[in-house]
Amino acid sequence: MTNPTAAMLVIGDEILSGRTRDSNAHHLAKALTERGIELCEIRVVSDKPDAITGAARDLSGRYTHLFTSGGIGPTHDDITADCIAAVFDTPIGVRDDARAILQAHYAARDAELNEARLRMARIPDGAELIDNPISSAPGFSLRNIHVMAGVPQIFEAMLAGLLPRLAGGAPVLSRTLRVSRGEGDIAAPLAALAAEFPDLSVGSYPSWTGTGHQVAIVLRGTDGTLLEQAVARLRQDFPEAAE
Amino acid sequence: MTNPTAAMLVIGDEILSGRTRDSNAHHLAKALTERGIELCEIRVVSDKPDAITGAARDLSGRYTHLFTSGGIGPTHDDITADCIAAVFDTPIGVRDDARAILQAHYAARDAELNEARLRMARIPDGAELIDNPISSAPGFSLRNIHVMAGVPQIFEAMLAGLLPRLAGGAPVLSRTLRVSRGEGDIAAPLAALAAEFPDLSVGSYPSWTGTGHQVAIVLRGTDGTLLEQAVARLRQDFPEAAE
Image (cartoon, rainbow over the protein chains, first blue to last red):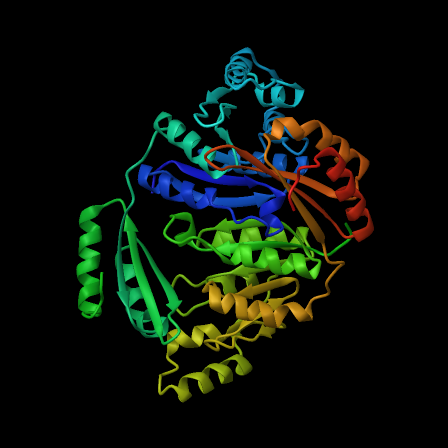
């Protein structure tokens, strides 16, 4: 595949302690697949500067895009913006356009733009803001790193605004066939199919229903004709397969 | 914290494409926290040999334990065992005890232990088997890497058998207080609290209820007395906080 590639970096102790279950990575995975951007890796790290900076440097060097979630609020443990600036040795400070957005937001609510909230206007030099239609404090794109909020509703709204700015690739098409057999019974024909269609990805995903095995066979690729040929071939091997 | 540390490696294209939402990392996070093992990082990588081997080498070198899920079934895309063996340059082949387990399982079900299924008896030299009470094909521990299945019911059953073998640490205690304010209003007292109690982790997790802000303040640490002192201090700052 020559589609753009991507990684996701989820920042937050609350995921690692099991207190919260992340949903942003799954949301991003679906959105990128639709847009033809191949999500290659997801990492979850703690709120420590070295952990964030190290992972961000590694992933931004390896993939076309890096999306981050979490750590851009007003409290002492919100250090993502400074860490991402450090990745590229970029100066960071309160930026006028970001400050104006916050000022308007809090003025309309009779709330104070105090020192803590003003931290959310700290934006690395040269970054492009990402709109936050829910609580106003913006995210930003610095080179190929896109920094967004951890609260799912805000992450999803920011992503919806960001994605149209990024070049997409050929949408990845997929077909799923389900058979009520053990994986061991279908492994040989599946391996033959994968060898015959090297441009498709052929996955098999078992589940256990409590009474028996079920396997979802998933074919994925950007060439619709090839995909249909492979599905026809699968139907010969497994006439009972359900779609 | 001087507790043992850990990382989780989730192997599977189906998570990265958004087809499936992983639940094993969240389950592991909760179980390790109870056992006093600090989960420091989670990675999700694709079914490619380089991706699996590279991440496993990096993470097993960095933490006390590495737990993996996925890629140990009988099909062509199940390559985890070989990749983990490669991390330590360990020979791998069908092992008699693992073969005997599979033979008994399939004989009892009048199913054939065919070539594909026999792949599930491929175990690196010197590894210790991890019991699979659901579908019999075992996981294994090789040095500090614990290789388990991706199907959640099987992952959870394997983990339940494995965890008592591993040395735990001091259980991490936590207390949560909820306040209906914006994070910006509580940031200054929270930062002061974090500075006053450096041995505790002080997190603040905002959520958006649709009608207003709510913040969960989470205090975590292994010293119960310290934790109570910090909670008392928080109650002074935020008398309206709900537990």
